Length: 159
Image (cartoon, rainbow, N blue to C red; front, side, top):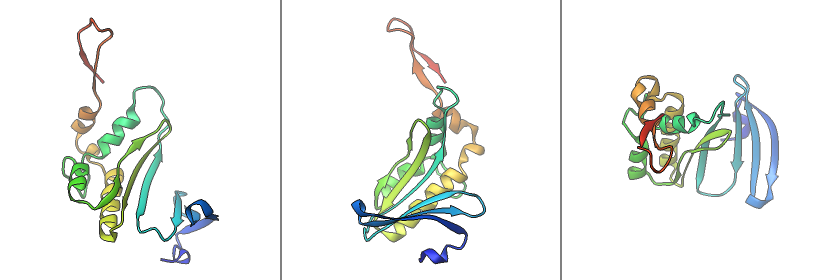
């Protein structure tokens, strides 16, 4: 694929990244304004990450609960835990999801082209079409914890 073929994107920045022996590109989707950061090099390990700004409005940890919840099946992949299935049957070199104080990211990597395409397909469907919209129990199973006010108090379930 050539950069010129990406007609639905506008090139915002192009820069040589010497430390990685790579070329970096910042692209913007013309219709939605979504930003894409592309790093091109000769490394066989292909990496993809989709990320979202998730600034907190309180300290309940909703972004982290959502990170787990969206990985509980999706429209195209309605299994209970596709993440576990991927770990068992994928040639991935990295597979995870992470919540930071202001963003949530879902990175995958593989040296195998077919596996890489599949990983991207599963992750994109998970974050854009999660089962959480069809099954409320998903959020409820991920959004609770044990709590005790002190070592002497009984443990309660909270969330």
